[in-house]
Image (cartoon, rainbow, N blue to C red; front, top):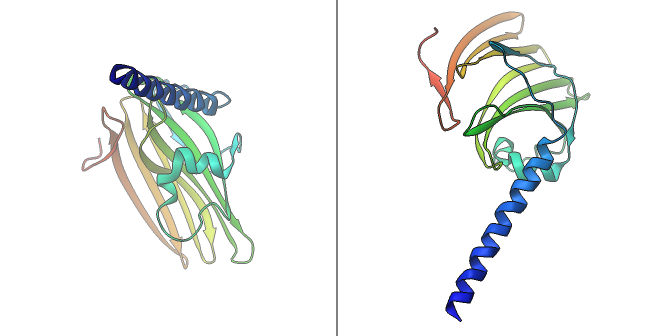
Length: 185
């Protein structure tokens, strides 16, 4: 009886893994592959294609929603805009978050680079681009993703007619994590 019971648990575990893989493949199927020759410029706003429902966002991208009590799904729309699946260990997904609120004169788009394992398990994310206006401030961040997994973020923020600029350099390690780099190469 015990051998049959362990075989049953093994088959149940394999079935769960194949269902998750199939769901992840279905999620990525309509998403266009992003071709990288040397580098890729990531800027907001992006074309709004492949809108995701709230259940899909919670299932696959819940870490970007945060653990705060406010509902980040309520006043936002999410779009899966692209994928880079050329790496053997992880995929990079381009997720667009759009927030519009007319009463507060808020209009913000955030483009995330999200790394996932080949089965869809979330690894890490980075805000690669932000464009928006909120009352008397404006945000404009863009980035360059290079073929060697280096990312340069260029941020420009204007608050009360004063401008602030910043640059940051990241690397994506072999496991798919975004690591802040101290040097600009």
